[in-house]
Image 1 (cartoon, helix red, strand yellow):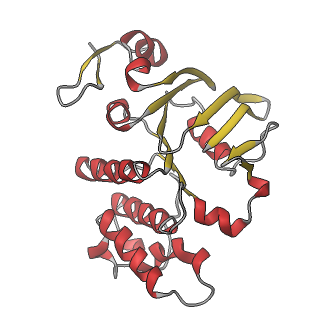
Image 2 (image 1 turned 90 degrees about the vertical axis):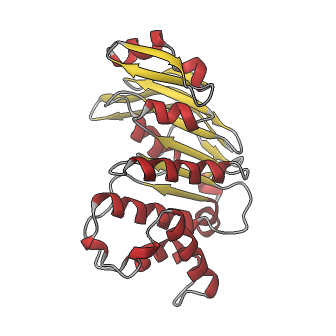
Image 3 (image 1 turned 180 degrees about the vertical axis):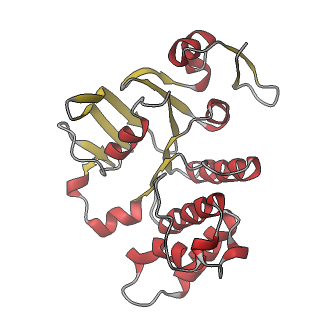
Length: 258
């Protein structure tokens, strides 16, 4: 689905990323984790073609982004950013409808309204559809933008790709798990998701593969069980931890401070 090699990035002569190779399969949920300043969001932005060009081409479905028609690309790829505008003078429903802009020129169609309604229900904001976006809490705004991204990819295209940068910020436990289950259901249909998370236990529970970064370099890129070991986590985060089996499943459970 997505291939990139020798990804490097520097800002004002400060190295942010250094020679990162990445390959993401169809139907895979890859979660990128690491301490603050590791380069997680920068890597996600580069992979999504939103932070300048890498010296080596990035391939999405065997084509570079330059080879894609911009409208077709909007049907195949979407991105959720952690920095969304806090001042949008629209109703919730109209903000979510922004995700359908690639599908119509002036007036939305029945299918667009249906996609918006479905996405709002999935993110639990349907009851807020007539509310002024600016009146919402931080978590509610977060879910509205997630709905906008989901409605963009509501189409008949096979093997779609979504990038998500810290999609769980400001969300309570219920909505964190609800959103992650929605993303997992998305990948189980043959689609792919690349997501940045801080919560290692949620990453362990839902990810197919983990990429662990530190200071712009890949420390480990493998399954959660192989990445989340006591030795690796304690070294990368410079903080003691205990790793034990999760009683709900076979994934690792990380307890810090012990």
